[in-house]
Length: 266
Image 1 (cartoon, rainbow, N blue to C red):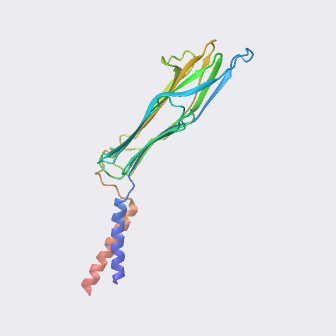
Image 2 (cartoon, rainbow, N blue to C red):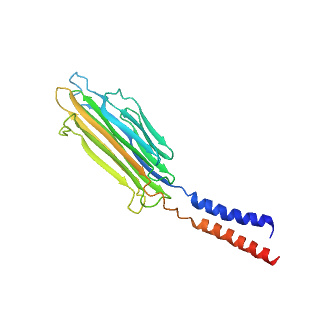
Image 3 (tube, rainbow, N blue to C red):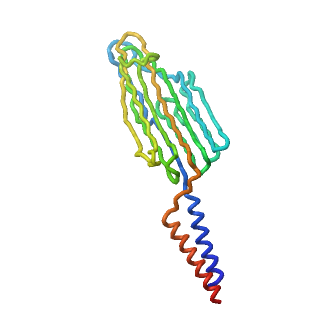
């Protein structure tokens, strides 16, 4: 066997081992309020008084944290009395990432966390609590509609990895949360299975109406919240090679064995 044959044999074996160790290790968590829209109706169009609503961002917070198993990087933003300013809070440390992006207006809010690699305890985390005050003019009704979408996924990781995504919505009277004038609440969460299995993505279309039939201004409170967690809890378990990897490794070893026999016979 020629030297090039030996080189090819070694290349097959090394490449197979390399592929085994290079399997992707990813945990991903995502939560999104999307296609949010606000519309209002004048309940007494002939009374000469203007109907309408106005929205301000009155309270809340956004936090992100990324930890690569050695050190952490965090970011935080307070949402106190903001003039609907866009939200962009991010943390990235090594192979861990956490991100929150929002339009500021009631139209879009997206948060995600991700971890890749095998670093012990690497994690990404987000927490969003976004609150609005909606001023509702007399004899005005408004509707908010949109969709909550959640997703978690895992690849190349041991089954003890943790992936979590959640979202919650609340609309009611400011302060009390009373929904006698309309509104409502809901929440949902999605998690990796105990065996590391990835659940199907979740989505929920919603529409809630709040009505002010009085002669006075009323104030509605809207809250949008999300959270994400991606956590590599057991990075020391070696990845399971694909069948193609075993085939390539076996081919390389057979070629090396043939090369050794050829050398002995000569």
